[in-house]
Length: 126
Image (cartoon, rainbow, N blue to C red; front, side, top):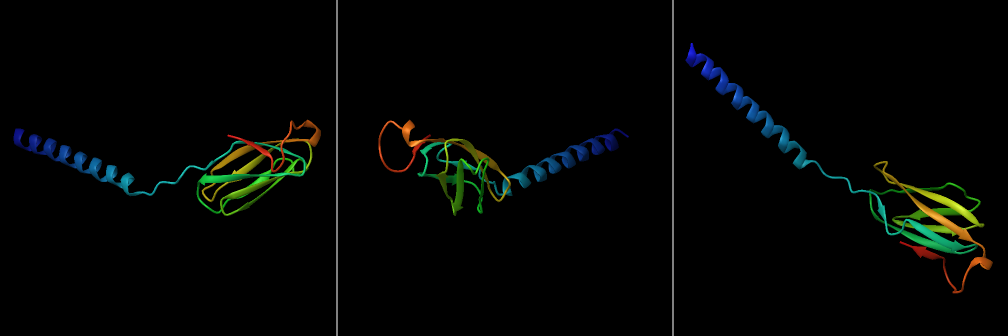
């Protein structure tokens, strides 16, 4: 009787060890999804200028949506987002990737009178 109980206990240990081994291997073979990330999280532009934000990680294709298109619009081609400053104010650009990950880029648009000098495209902040 003791031999039968010992055998049953040994079999239970073996089955538990095999189950652990099989389930622990499954996770290692699954591909990982890259997190959505951009080179900038804040952009400041003057009215009429553009700024570029680069998506550095994520799964294409990407979509972009402005919270206020009267202040700033956004377009995406491949992994490059072009933000156009339309009118003074603030907006958020929502970026989504193919795996439904999302992030925001804050946009501040100032009038030409608010700038302290310099020409060219908008000022960007990291």
